[in-house]
Amino acid sequence: MLITAKTLEGFKLNSLDGEIGKAKEFYFDDRHWTIRYLVADTGGWLTGRQVLISPYVLVTADKGEEYITVNLTKQQIENSPSLSSDKPVSQQFELDYHGYYGYPMYWGGLSIWGADPYIQRDREQWDKSTPAEKKGDPNLRSTREVSGYHIQATDGEIGHVEDFIIDYQTWSIRYLIVETVNWWSGKKVLISPRWIERVSWNESKVFINLPSEIIEKSPEYRQEILLMRDYETRLHQHYNRQGYWVDDSNDLVQPL
Image 1 (cartoon, rainbow, N blue to C red):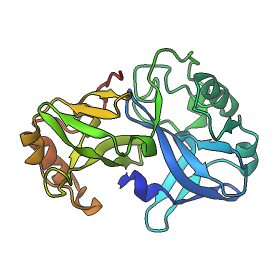
Image 2 (image 1 turned 60 degrees about the vertical axis):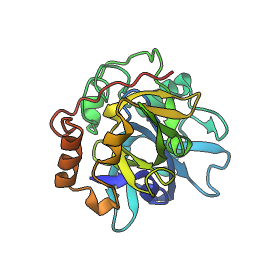
Image 3 (image 1 turned 135 degrees about the vertical axis):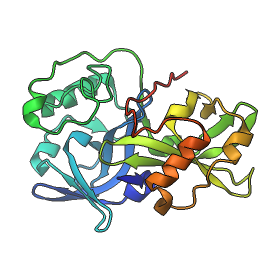
Image 4 (image 1 turned 120 degrees about the vertical axis):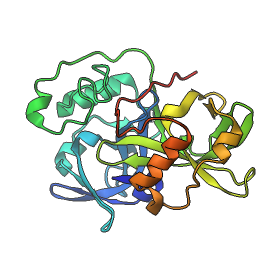
């Protein structure tokens, strides 16, 4: 169920009536660290606008064949609210977008998906959701934008964000892959968003409330094949933290 964001980039997007392009990047929110939109590269189709696909209709991701199934038609996508390719995703756009498709408002409750802790793909359940006005700030962030952010431990910098590990069943970001090439001979380590103290978007920096020595001694991340449950268990035991698979309610991270 786990895969890196960079691996997903380039996957073909198969709609109900044909291929619509490829996955380009992802927008996630900085409250729950959950993917809210896949940004599609449609090539020559729908030029000049961002084409956003919600996880509500991302049905399957096939790692072997490198495609993602999208439960929409081309016409539905073409007629969806248009967002200029050089504009950020505004709250008003999200309200229009969710209203057009009839999706539940993911900000309409305390859980990751509003009223639900897990993504709900049953359209009959969507009709039972209560619309909610989006308030406050979390903001949407791009996986490409945040790649390269510096990681600050309690006693100094230790590296930078290289990639993200996504659970493509829930579309939660489970880990940040941290490259420490300038500190520990290129060792890569994983940091859970739950262990992040805060993020300074102005400084492009992620703050971890842990000393560098503890992070350096964590189980090394070498390749995606290591992302088995026994590896994750050892990782969480090292930090004396409970696994997300035990309690799947994400901690909150306050942006600056």
